[in-house]
Image (tube, rainbow, N blue to C red; front, side, top):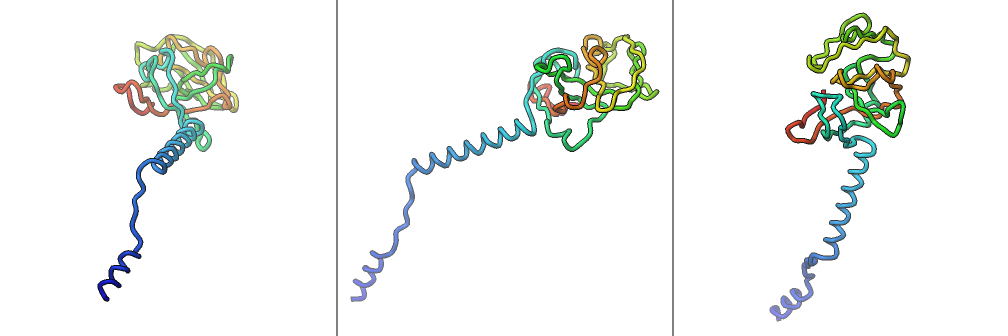
Length: 191
């Protein structure tokens, strides 16, 4: 009698089951894909944006067709500094974007004497501008207006920059160059 009672208990014990792949696996994969897309969109729309360099005005740091990420969030919490490489809407045509280096800040006094940039009476040491990319252009002294920045390309002899279109206002600056990701041999932080 004990044997039959034991057998009955075994028959009543719940069985462990495993669901075959298919329905819930597909739902899980779809959910993961949607979450990944949402996170990617958030990063691209609010934090980092991939851009492609067109032109050679930032040689040798950035070459034509380089791909880089710009930080669109940086200037919401920090100030723009002299030496930053920024991306901005071209003041004369907002459908175009330019990438240049900030050389003077609001309130700075700037003049350019045969290619040498003077800010507040001090000649800038510009190691990022190789000798072969320098030029001998001059510009009379000016004071950068409040809320504007004087920007220049590192390849001074061919760059269209604030010497041509004037200081760039703060609302036009929408990103800070952060990291070159392509081509791989150029990969690295933008300085």
